Figure 1 (tube, rainbow, N blue to C red):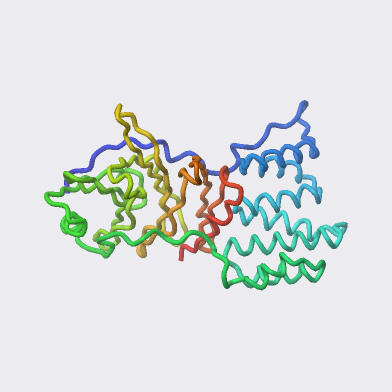
Figure 2 (cartoon, rainbow, N blue to C red):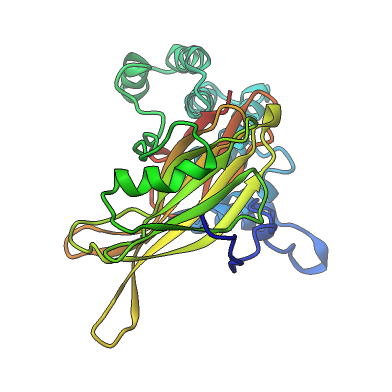
Length: 341
């Protein structure tokens, strides 16, 4: 392998949280809960989840049941199981909550439990909901629980050379696996911590890039191929746009790498095709959790869909939480919580 190369990546130290989107208070520093509730609903309709949740948290700060219920609903859509569970539980605990509202809150509590993968808790919440108020959709979700429902996207496909091996053998392994003659490997993006970096296999026909981690034994292991390739555009160019390393539990760093695929037109101008985020765990037992589409063309005629994520690996139970801050109408179907250990 060649010596490491410097690479420019947007600052990965900036927070991915939701706090930046908090709406400003009203005049004289007074927050109007009713106005914030309306504002939160408007942001939700625009699928601007971070701003919607921030506004609804202000509306619900005084314990208003309607605002808490709206917050639980919106946080569930965004895939934010913790905010959804807190808001739903607050509605349930309020003695003034009527049975229909309490039944809805139990439903949201169940959805939050599903997002974090706690199926027994989800079942108990749905049973409480239908006991308070009969509901065909809730009963159907209860019946399907743990059978047909998907917790999130599947992990990315296994890349070549995904077994631990000495560093001096990795480039040859990749070149052989990809049937590339005269391939050489270039290391980049190695200054961001987490014990991982990118390796590009340079050959005449193509230059695929892989996320590689260094094991405690000193050996290397390929975790994932970066960038989703397309048979219709085999010469698409890859650009790494983000590299985040989060401190996960049990010393298992969570690495997020965003990669954009571009196609050049006849004039040589790059045209974005898609962008994806890959989430992988480094450490002693490295593996990849998911590939999530940040930008892709969908439908006919095609339109561009964007997805913005907030990722938190601070949960002491070993779970990484992925939340949509801006994106499609039902992002929870893309996400869920992922167990780190």
